[in-house]
Image (tube, rainbow, N blue to C red; front, side, top):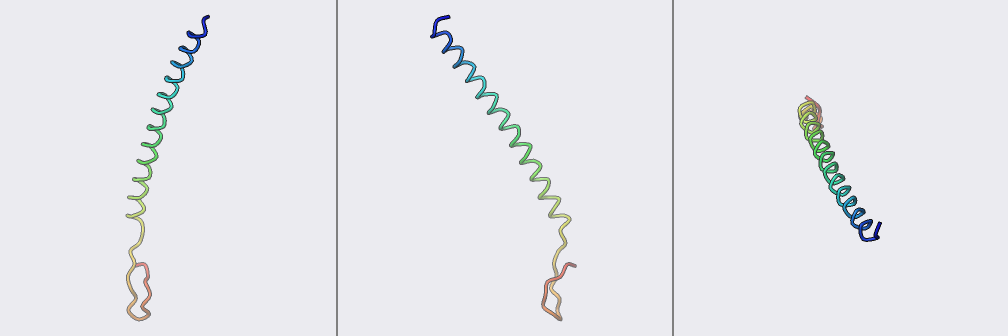
Length: 62
């Protein structure tokens, strides 16, 4: 095989690999961002609110 054809095949394979890696990278990042958003919303709902104790002046869950 001429060296040019080997180089062209290697370049095409590298381009395919980069495209596949980029697509997978985006898929994983979108899944991570979605799970982070769900976790933040869940934390906000389950976290207790704080109220100030009038006698001691400290903040307490309530």
